Picture 1 (cartoon, rainbow, N blue to C red):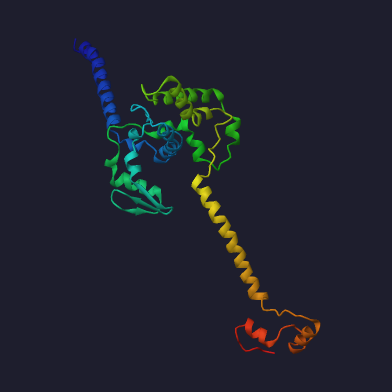
Picture 2 (picture 1 turned 120 degrees about the vertical axis):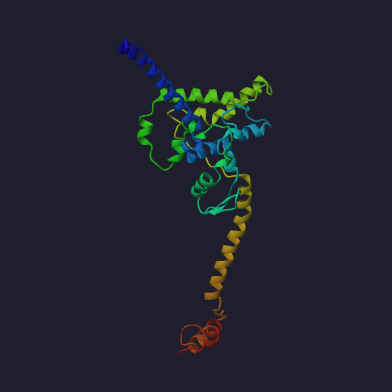
Length: 283
């Protein structure tokens, strides 16, 4: 009887042990530090694309993404820390929270992890790096590498699935109740044109063109004429310094006379002193 009782209780013990292990694992997952599995460099690639091709579209229409949109800036895990970065120049990055300076952004990121880990967005689990397959982080991360074989081995079916996910994500970000059907459709087309439409084997490795901003065009248009004028003045000054002291001969006789005086080189001692600053001349 005791043996039978032990056999019957064994499955219950195993079940309770399994439930306890599962609860412990769930607790570990819930209490895990979000930054431990969220890549800052990859999140930065996605964030830069959102700034250039996503948020600007909403701002131009005086709108903002739906608050439940995973791409909303307020849900970005690192948005507070990223907003407290100051790039004074290429080799100086300053923490706006404590004033410490670093010569590379990477070390400022480590500083945030070590000293300001409490500045993560509370309650947010959105890691922008999780959307790398949609925002083509591999292309932006390896811009200088040759993707010849990746292009040849590209599978259109996989990219079609990504494109559908991308379109569903963009639709979830549309404002609700603020736009007409036509305006909503146009907004969707704009925010998805530079992201979802590139998810095919033909356009996947295409990088956005670096267009020159209008103020740079004005700057170059103003500076360029002054640059060429300064260049002309510079070369004229060089020419005048080396060749501007030659005498102008009105007739052949005066030229022969000057050559006799100067030993046949066409320069008088007065001219030479003028050129060489009054230094003693050696004959």
